[in-house]
Image (cartoon, rainbow over all chains, first blue to last red; front, side):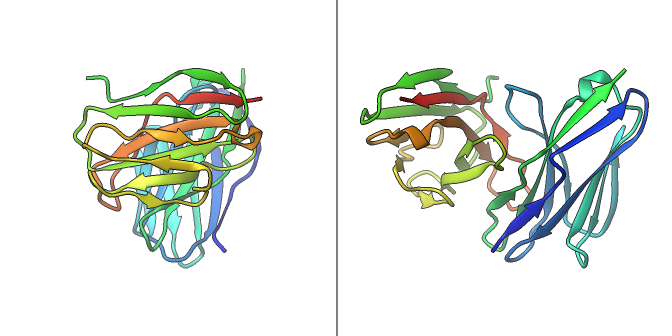
Length: 109
Length: 113
């Protein structure tokens, strides 16, 4: 079967750095996406990785290792507005997105 | 530019009733999707359409139907609603390539009693 695993909840302090991990087992791989979803709102796109390595975009970075079936999202200089759920999704062999349940990130002052 | 709109925002429905959730996009995207999101579960794909005139079944299609008569609109119909269809429904669209970002509508919160 297809499976995406990510921690259910994480807590971090304002100004700090947090790493949200995602492991996957899917039928085929055509890229991995990270989305942010604030409570009661729609998911919004953060990043896309299809090759191994680190992609940096401002305070957010995303890493991929295809051989390990592993990705992480790194958030630096945390702000209160970063409190949200972070969703990991993998495009499978049919190019359909398989979604993880999301990691709820709580930022404390 | 509105992006993707969904209607209604929320709805309470009696079991056994028919309901159509509306979705419209103005980005001229080829692909459109319907997901449901339930607490503790990831987004689950109900139906999708890669281009106008074609549709396909996702992970959880039973009890739902869709149509794609044109590029902009992708309605989702529940023929006879059941309580297990209580969920938040998101419509999304993308240009259609495997690496293309999916853009989501604001969602419809549906309660079936």
